[in-house]
Length: 211
Image (tube, rainbow, N blue to C red; front, side):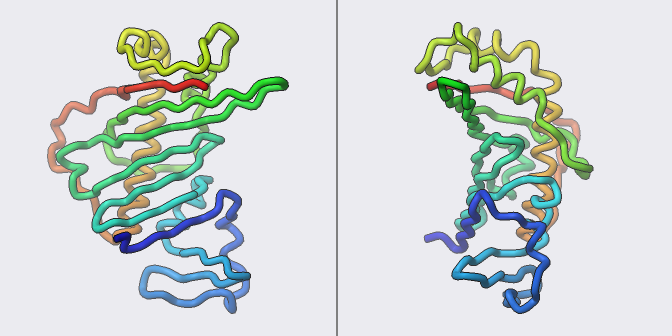
């Protein structure tokens, strides 16, 4: 059974969460709950961090020590499930990344499953635009691409990925660093990486779905 479920609508604006104190009920040392028109929102340092980065948290399920998250950045929807105490042994995060392209006459949906290395932990700075990820996805919004289509062939995937590997890795290192900070604030723990000599690897795309 889910120990904690927080569902937050995509349109929620965390920056407005500092409004009238009468709408808040203290939950404990780490969080508050906003009560307004039957809409419940968990306010904490973790969700405040995502708000400061411009991320929209759409779903957060906690089952034991595992977090299942769905969040939106720059029009991309990310879905992942993370077990924090395994990150040192498996320093990478699996994502399903989705985006809709709305054209004048057509609408194209692209979903990419990938694994992204965490890299060296760093403190994320200001909001970062995902320009390389957008350019990578934009390839599939082209007249010559067969739709619907699911691509799993490694050589085909590598041909789409080759021009974007380095910068895509940097963008996902940023995303993973922000995600780790969120996890640390959510669980009130520090995620440590003891194996500093490990190979960081590249972003590995497993499949691409176009429809």
